Each structure stands twice: as structure tokens, then as C-alpha cells.
Amino acid sequence: MNAQTAITEGHADTPKGNYLTNGSTLASWLLTKDHKRIAIMYLISVSVFFMMGGLYAATIRLELLTPASDLVETATYNKVFTQHGILMIFFFLIPSIPAILGNFLLPLMIGAKDLALPRINLLSLYIYWLGGGLTLFALMQGGVDTGWTFYTPYSTTFSNSFVMFVGLGIFINGFSSILTGLNFIVTIHTMRAPGMTWFRMPLFVWAHYATSLVMILGTPVVAITVLLLAIERATHVGIFDPSIGGDPILFQHMFWFYSHPAVYIMILPGMGVISELISNFSRKKVFGYEFIAFSSIAIAVFGFLVWGHHMFVSGQSIYAGMVFSFLTMVVAVPSAIKMFNWTATLYKGSISFDTPMLYAIGFMGLFLIGGLTGLFLGAIGLTVHLTDTYFVVAHFHYVMVGGQVIAYLGGIHYWWPKMTGRMYSEFWGKISAMLVFVGFNLTFFPQFILGYQGMPRRYAAYPEELQVLNIFSTAGASVLGIGLIMPAIYLTHSLIFGKKAGDNPWMHPGLEWRTSSPPPTENFDVMPVVTWEAYEFGEESGLDLEGAKRRDAAGVA
Image (cartoon, rainbow, N blue to C red; front, side, top):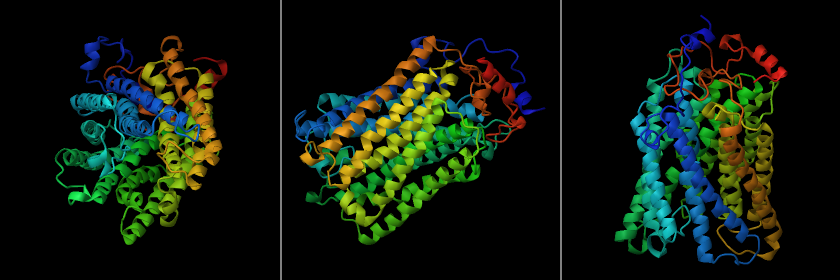
């Protein structure tokens, strides 16, 4: 029995409905335990937070168009950049790929009917809504002005903003991440289809496994840290406030012990997406599959050992600084392994430049710049000059936006036909991808120069000689904004007017492409049996690649 027979036996009776049409009332969605519907509700929720965070970003760039603080007051500006960071990091960047693509695809990729703990999966969504609702309530009541890092003693003593409500919202939201990570780990360990061994799992699954470990081990630390911050602010017991015996450096240690691994919660799932895109659109097995898989685990482990590089100028011991500087250089090695192996996968591949692949190539270029500039910030001497300048802002956005957001967009475009059963406009998809890439570089590359020249971040005013670079940055933000708005338009348009997608429009060997588009409620009619290796494009995978090429040449869907 070949691979195709093993996966399709018993599929003669195609399911009459799918997860989108089987029970379409509002109650059926709000009470669903289907991981795919939960993913769609996450998609809508996360998109709302992304839109709000983007509006704050637009306000920042408009303020910085001129040297004087003439658009909003400085106190308001403090709230604007704080709220941009809080919404984007805690309610978009961290949950976006795991909660949306991970929720939707992980069971499909390993041949499971659902996640192992479907009720807890729905609970994690409700917790996300509750945490987000409390945070939005605080923002509407007057906002918070501490910066998204909530540094003490300002956040505990001097700030008159709604720190406690925001802290409570983030504290509650942390449990959503913990439950999602727990669910993924249990599912991967217990619900893989027959033949789906650890080294046949897609690298997307490996990336989410590593991410889940960080979620479970790191999120409780920041949750307790924010809770202690609220207790300190309410009772003045002297945990972080130095005037009454507290230690503000302790807060930074606790906050960054989670918040640097949180960078990998954001970027590891994106790396998993890129592995799928690079393999599929070059029609090759991923070069060094085992190395990429283990590099995800290595990033998760080393990510917990480098938090101190955020504190080189905060009173930390010089000897501790030397250790953290060394470890910061070491943590770059697993990421470099991925970059080299993706490049080797592309070498002599049959590359097709569809929209998802454009995002994948853009990711490689932008993440490379983000990673290399991270080495500058890991060097103690350079960091003394660059800390709290726009160099840090540019580096962070090259990693997070140039990495995670680009990967997220690539993944959404890649799996959109599977999620909706519809194809989008390739023309507008490619235009959007190019606008995002050009607009992003025009926005953030000038900020490296601004930071090197000494422009501090979080200031609403700056010297006149720095205006030209800020004008470039604001112009780039306009292009980037257009590029980000376009997918919302043409993807929504595709839901009604898009061509119907086949079950496997990309001809990828993964299990998620061997069920209908959109998938039925229980994903597969019968339990699939995996008899091929990961990313196997030959006859062993059971794919009729030559037939697909002939149909493409004839223009047949």
C-alpha cells in the first residue's frame, strides 16, 4: 500500500459539511471545541488588537515627523508608545502564530482530530478576551505611561496612570499562553497519527513544541512579576521601591527572565512557518532537518540564559555582564543554523515565487539584519552608547516585525486556501508583499543611523538635524501601512469572490493538505497512516507532481 492509498483509504464518502458550515449560529461558535473555529476567533481578535496597535504606531510616526513635540503633549506621547508596545507584544506578537496558525494546523499536521484538551483550548480564548478587555478598559480610562516594560520605581510610585488594571490584564492573559502551550505539548506527545514519528513531524510542529516549553516555563515568571508590581503599587510593601527597602534591579531581572525568552515565543513559530514555505516553494526536502529541529530546542534553552544583556547599564556586575555578553553571542548560533540550512534548501531548488515565498525570502533578509545588529547590542562597550536609542528600536522591529510579522503574513497566505477553501489574488498578494518589504526597510533602517547618532527612544522631540531621517522613517511607515492593509481587503474579498481552492493547491506532502479545504469538523474521515518522510516530494509521498505541472500549464485549477 503506497502513501497515497494509506492516507486516502476510506475517503470515498466525502463529508457533506466542513468546520465553517456545520452549525453556523453564534452560540455554536462561542461554545465550540473545534480547534479550527477557535483559531478563526483568535484571528479576528488578534487582528483587532493589531489594528489598534497600528493606529498608535501611526501616531508616533506623525509626531516624529517634526522635531518639536507639536502633535500631542509629551505626557500623551508617553501613553501612546506604551500602549503601542503593550497591545502589539502581549496581544498580537505573542499569540498570533501559535493561537491562530498553531491552533488551526497542529492537529492537522500530526493527523489528530483535535487538540488533546479542547475545553481548555476554548478556555484559553476566553482568558485572552478577558485579559484584553481589562487592558482596553484601562486604556480607555486614561491609559498607562510607563513603557511596556513597567520599570520600577516609576511604575510603582510616580506614575498616575492605570498601571494596576493593565498589569491585571497582562497577568490574566498570561494564563492563556500557559494553557495553549500545555495543550500543544500534550497533543504532540499523545495524538500523533500512526507512522508520525518525531522525525517525520513538520518543522512547524517542532517550532511550536519548543515555543510551548518557553510558554510554560517563562510565562508564570512575568505573571508573578506583574502581580508583585500591582501589590507594591497598592500596598507599598517595599519589593521594588528603593526608598522603602526594595530593589528595582530585582524587577528587571524577573521581568527580563521572561521577556527575553518571550522574543523566542514570538519568533520560533515564525521560523517554523518559514521552514514550511522554503521547502514547499523550492520543491526540496529541508536541508539538515534534524539540525533545524534541534536548533529550535536549543533556542528555547539558551533563551533563558541571556536576559542580563538588557541590564548592562542598569547596575549589574561587570562580571555578570561579561557572562551574559558571551551567552548572547552563543544564542545566535542556532538561529544561524536555520539561516544556513534554509539557504542550502533553496540551492538548486525548483523555486516558485508565489506570494508566501516572497514573504519567506523577505523574512530571511530582514531577520538576518535583525540578528546581526543584535550582536552589536550584546557587546558591552557598544551597548553603553546604543542603549535606549533608536538603534534598539530598529533592531527589535527587524526581529519582531521583519521576522514574526512577515512570517505570520506568509503563513496566512500559504494556509488561507486550506482555512477558507478559497484562493486570493496572487497579483495583489505580490504587490502587498513588496510594499511591506520596501516600506519596512524605509521605516526602520534610518532608525539604526538615528540611534548611532544618539537619538534617544521614547522622546517626542529631537534635534533639527535628525529630521530628514525621521521624515524617511515616517514615509516608510505610510508605505508599510498600505502594504499591511491590503491583505485585509483582498483576503476578505476572496471569501466571497475567490476561486475555489483544491484540497492541495500547492502540492505539498504534509498531512494538512490531504484533507478537504476547508477541513471537516474532525479533520479526517479515517485515521491517516504516515508512510513517507517529512518534506518528501518524490513518488514515496504519493503526490502526482508531473500531473500537477501539466494542469498548471493548462491553467486548470
